[in-house]
Length: 407
Image 1 (cartoon, rainbow, N blue to C red):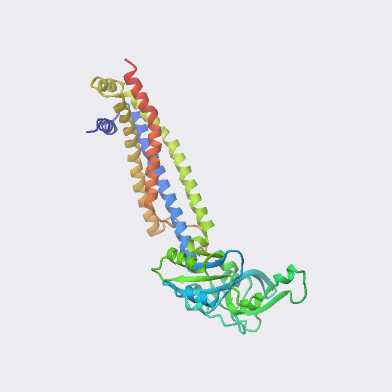
Image 2: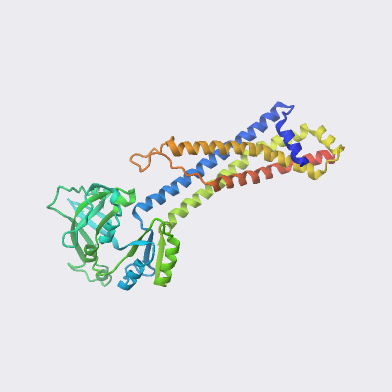
């Protein structure tokens, strides 16, 4: 039997003679429990936000994207495209040509991002579920129709009933502007009609117009050029494995991005914010551990006679030191376990019932998203162990000093 742990258990479960010492011990347990519960809930919310963002990206971003490393527009040869399509796990290869342009309609104008796609985009049924009004078709360069974000549609006052007046699109010829060759051909112009309204997320809705690829080539004057190739994979396909095959196939000069890498900065910002929140809450937990420090210090003073009796029975300074370190761990971990249990229950309730609303009108979700992660519980437990150990060192040393130095 571990003597130090046995004595620590006796001190933990026995009631102190001085009621205020017992009160401080209970306050220590409660403070640690509340901090642990809050930390679990906050980390779970960050996990939920990250998963929500990834799920949102999945609605309009491809599984993999092929970009050129050093230029905005490029072209894969038919042989290369066929080789990419032959890789197991790839179901669709969507060529894309996109850039910003200006639209004008009904005496209004707005800078939008045009995205030119071909029939393979429609064959993959991409964004079909996000169509809130209209029909799922694009037409061609001779009679162009477009999927318009709901923010663009409302801001420009567009209407499906207006079949006479089209929306004008304007795009500058960058080569002419660089040569200062400014004339009537410097700005290209084409027209289109809206065929469907998309509702995805705020940034997408307020700036995106999806048009036929051939129409976009005519507007930009870049026949056969592409901004990217977007790949749709099977549900069971491994994106990292396919990425490695694409890197080997295409060689240098191309950048292959997974869905997470396409939004690496945003996801990294969420992780950094989560880390700083964890550190701040750990610091607050350290402040709360002062009650544990005072509780153990007062307990050492109260138990001076008992400690001398233990010395007479042959307890060593090392065993006595461990006794109070174990006692600090028992006090803190009892509170931490209760806090973890409460955090788990509250997080589960929020996950199932959405008790705490988000409070944002017309948001995509009504309540704060929650996603519990086992590693959050483990890191929280480790933080409690480290903080408790540091807070218990001085009272433990004081117990040894009072017992073996004072006769």
